[in-house]
Length: 162
Image (cartoon, rainbow, N blue to C red):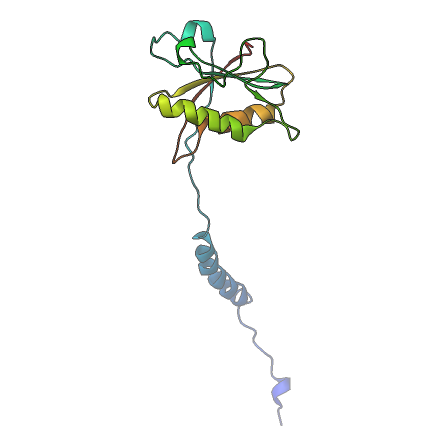
């Protein structure tokens, strides 16, 4: 008498379980790929300019923001000066606070200038040598504004001319 356990077991092809696993993983991976989304962000890198020779337009605001260790200096064409703008030797227009640079006040002052000069797109930004790179980048971000309310999207870097 022959028992079942005595018969040789034909295991078949050993690749079948692996192929089954691969066939199950392919749809799972394709399903997961739908959740990966890419977005292209259009960024205009700032140009490096020399202020004296670049701004020739008579109607231009000639807006400059200088980042110094004391705060922000905002310079415009003398015809468009505001009452809040400091004199040449009286210190920065937006002094530093205890928390550091006042970017909210910078945005507010530039919004005021933009409301009177809607067509103006260019701003020149300069910084003293000891200003950290992160401060300069944050200044560029606040001067560009937002997508819904752009301020001065054309940023040009220049030397510090306080």
